Structures are given as structure tokens and as C-alpha cells.
Length: 225
Image 1 (spheres, rainbow, N blue to C red):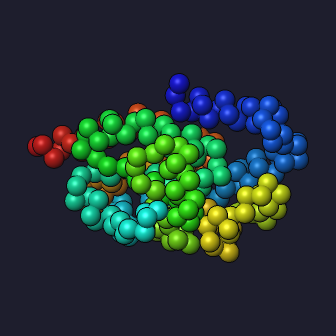
Image 2 (cartoon, helix red, strand yellow):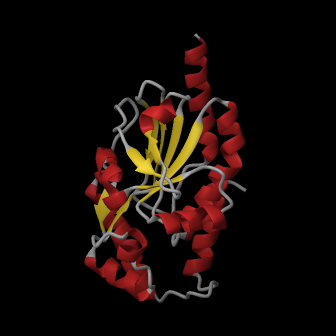
């Protein structure tokens, strides 16, 4: 099943009250309104896009090791997936889909990292729960997300809703600010230039990992040439 089909099925179950957490119409209206406002803001169109230079970063993995973009690109192209956190079921479905696609990514000479604002223990939980074999990097205070243009502040009514769900982002992220990255996926070539960018302010929509393969094939062909 394609990733978006899985996301749509989960959304239908959630909004249809078929999961343990049964949202009211008011709750759904708040969530839909926040998404619509983020779309209307146009921020996704102002984020880094294909052809831009990728911002440099050095972040820690869950074991505290420093991971630098420059070192990753020395090995080959890099797929970067920004996600919201371990508490987000849509993100977890995407991570699982990326794990399934990892052998194809590696076969094309590329590597994969995920980036979220959450703390190392929560990243370890993401890796464990989703059976991941690629690293999750902690973007403290969402500084790298800001550099890519995808960091946004949650509206107050959504903050109150998340608090009622016990989605305590300041605790998850060790950051008093209620901010998140828009879900985004990038392919960065060895030259540091973004070859593919997909940013969606609607967190229930994610591109299928299969979209990465033609991009990685082109980068591989360019290297061979």
C-alpha cells in the first residue's frame, strides 16, 4: 500500500471515531483550521527548494555523536526527512515507509537521516518503535528547520488542544516554544545543492518514498558522467 493510502486510512479512522482517541467536531475544526491557516500563510512556498544550497548543519544522534552534513555528503547524496515527533502517528507511518525504502536508497549510493526537534530519548523511542536502521538527529530549538524555512509556531488554540491531548511539546523537545517543522523531505547532492524538495503544511500528506528514486538515479548518472 502506498504511503498516502496508509495516511488517508489512519486519518479516516481517527476522524471517524474508530480509534481510542475520539475527537469531537470542535477538536477536528481546530485542527483543520490550524492546517488551513498554515497553508494560507504561504510559508511552504518560501522554504528551501530544489536548486538552493542546503544550509550547513551539525546535529547529535540519539547517542550524542555529532553528525555533520558535510561529512554525510562526502559519502554520497543525502535524503533528509524532517518530522514532527514520536507522538505524531502520521510521522511514524512515514518513518516506516522510509525504512522500507532504505535498501533502494542505499543501493543508489545515498544515505538517509531524519531530523526532529525532540530530545535524544524520544528519538531513541522513534527508532525503537519504528524499527529504524537510519539515524534520527535532534534539532535543538528547531534551528536547522528554521534555516530550511520550515519552522512555524503553533496557534494558541492548537497549543491548548495539544495540551489536552498531553502532547506536551516543551517536554518532548526540551524547548519552551511551541514550534514544529512542517513535514519536509529533501535530497541533497554531494555538491550541497538541493536536488529535490517537498514541503507540505498539511501534515497528513507526505510524498511516497518512490519519488526519491528517479532523483537519486539522476544524481548517480551525473556522478558517473
